[in-house]
Amino acid sequence: MAILTNALDNLLGYQMRRATAVLMADFVRTLSDFDMRPAEITTLLVIAENPDCSQSEVGEAIAIKRANMVPIIARLIERGLVARTRVDGRSLALRVTDKGAAQAAEAWRRIAEHEARFRDRLSREDLATVLSALPVLRSAVEEGGSGDGQ
Image (cartoon, rainbow, N blue to C red; front, side, top):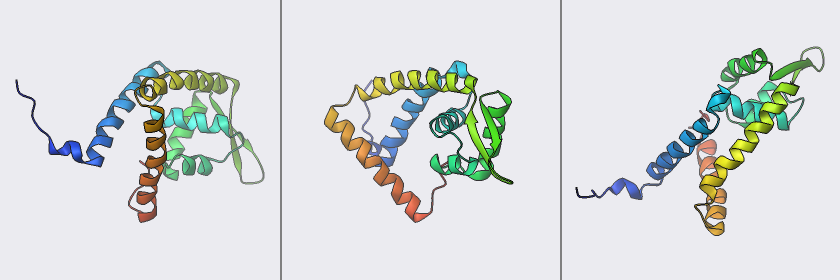
């Protein structure tokens, strides 16, 4: 069987979508026994790193709309991973519970292994280039207002 040529291979978006699909499939597989969606894991990790943050701050940090944060936070609280504490008359702060801290630590350990599987395929220079280029591309969408982080 002949290998077909594919002009799509020269498109940045096409290559990024294919790479992202591989990365996300491995990420999901790596954390599959957590029974959590990637957005829930990401939210837990941000809260663990930023005790007493607000729900809107977490949403902004990971580019998730406010309305979409509500069920994510509710599920983390329901599972006993995150707790809300009242800061003042109206504001609520988020903090991981002991169970949430243990889960976050294990997630970070596994994510480090996941990251290494892909980082090790790149030279140090190529990795630095990719890590510096991707935020530039992301900011083009953020400045243009056509993306919502979902």
